[in-house]
Amino acid sequence: MTSDLEIGLYILLLAGFLGYHIITRVPPLLHTPLMSATNAISGISLIGSLVVTGADYSPLSTILGTIAVACSSTNVVGGFLITDRMLKMFKRKEDQVDRGRRRLPAGPIVGGAVTVAVALLLILAGTGRLDPGAGGPAHGRASQHVLSFLYIVSALLFILGLKGLSSPRWARRGMFAAELGMLMAIAGTLFHHEIVGYRWIAVGLAAGSIVGATMGLRIPMTAVPQRTALSHSLGALAATLVGVSEYIRHGEALGGVKMTAIGFEVVIGALTFTGSLMAAAKLQELLRGAPITYRGQNRSNMALILAMAGLLVALIAVPSASTLFFVMVGLALLFGFLLVLPIGAADMPVVIALLNSYAGLADAAMGFVLANRIQIITGALDGTSGFLLSLLMCRAMNRSARNVLFGAFGGQVEAEAGRGEDDVARGTVRTIVPDEVPGLLDGARLVVIVPGYGMAVAQAQHGVAELAKILVKRGIDVKYAIHPVAGRMPGHMNVLLAEANVPYDQLFEMEQINPYFGEADLALVIGANDVTNPAARTDRSSPLYGMPILEVDRAKSVIVLKRSMRPGFAGVDNELYYNEKCMMLFGDARDSVTKLFTALK
Ligand code: NAP
Image (cartoon, rainbow, N blue to C red; front, side, top):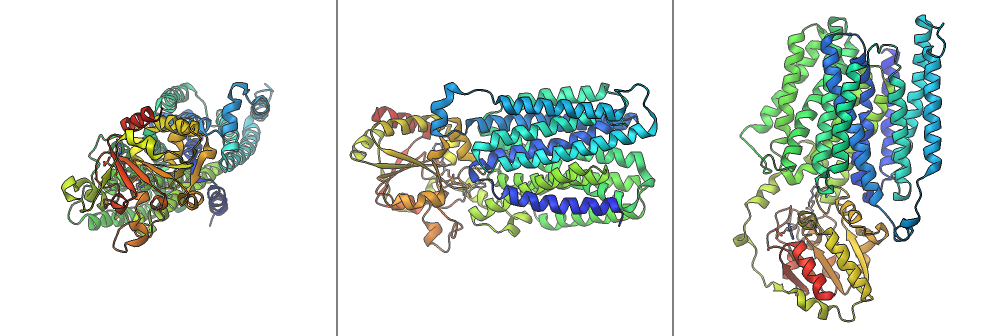
């Protein structure tokens, strides 16, 4: 084993281990920002793309590199901006009171500016650009050493950035450190000794920054899942293009190790690119969200995997066989489409998290190809984060990891899509109208609000926050109960409620809130369904059996806001609706919340 490969593998293992420990400490509250933060950090693939673009390899490398620079910088700029937008929303009650008196954090900004300035001076010194008499191979080596140190500092800042996400209090500061690390790594790379021209770098950076800034500043919080999928596809495209460029550049001179790394980079990159594009299109409803299945699907997918593996082995033996290389890339692109085809839109979050981890692996492979260790570190962090989030989602949904990994999911969505109102189980359902609610709340002391996917669909979060304020004015204690997989993204409800200025210290995780339901006068369920279904505790035949739920049926009374008796994501009836304590308030959640607000005012 070459020492470079050996060191790279050690780094991959240790960074993965470190990532595991840091990311398991990120509370569910911050899981959505975590996804976009790792996305931004994995945009470090930009530094490899910068070198490919700016070096005088070949016109094709410059073109591929420029596209890769545009893709990676879109992720860096867009990822950091949207993460900051989300984190700014997370406030405690006292922070909201203090809002008027808030100042910019001058310390970190000054510290950051000084650090960047010192780093750039060091690089300039290393490249000899401060000393016109310097030159020759020695100055190239010197600048490489300075750059390596700079990358180590950047990696440290990225790790601190992710560590900051262990609490909303430190999260923005942590992200500031990560942004600084990114700035240092990019600025330093611009002095890389192989870079001879800046024109195409400037084009790629400008295009990526404009697209990234537009996405980061404009995209509504409800569209975060599709934005995340889109940025995975851009990151994966960048890795694939750099891999193709490196293959064309080195061709038959590639050894077995480099060929293996390039093979992994382009195969994982290409399948993640098309798979993530499909996921984004399904979530944006540009494609039909229902799973698309056909006979022999698993077998043909397996055949494709074997074909790609066979081609990679052949290429390791004969790296110059370029036709095989391009066939392999083509198959990987096709495989990405086929992988996501049978998965329903509602199951996409798990797929997105998995694709996130694949994008991380492609990045790490790119690090091996370009002998760039910081990319191995960020690739491992991104890969671990995506993998852990998908496992956490599976656990909270009571699904096995195997079921997710082998893509045999989405069937329930078909059940959901095909289910009509005639199909519901029989039972007595009580209804309520908004004007009856104030009477019900006479003498109430505790109301627990349970938001779910329907609140996101109806965009009712602002109305819900206003409604809670009215209840508080009536002397009622209001708590929000957040299930880990309520909605369609980890931490989905937290972000929406934070957007509506609900202080995060009023949000209670499932384990914290369940003991309170027994003493709650009312559980107000707003567009949540599966996460409240008591069948998860009692009915062994239910697909939800074993999934931990919010125990709303233990409250003294329950009001459910939804449009009909249709089931939720899992496609099963909710026993709760037939409970004599439960009353249905049918209608769009936003309309119903407005009517409740008016009735209570
Ligand atoms: P849910 O079980 O999917 O139910 C959402 C309910 O919202 C539906 O029953 C729907 O009923 C109602 N609804 C939709 N639009 C509405 C509107 N405009 N106004 C009022 N109600 C509306 O949602 P959940 O309780 O939040 O549970 C989440 C589900 O997603 C779980 O099964 C979870 O396993 C799954 N999941 C979550 C994640 C994640 O990371 N969060 C990832 C993957 C899967 P009507 O049509 O009758 O209105």
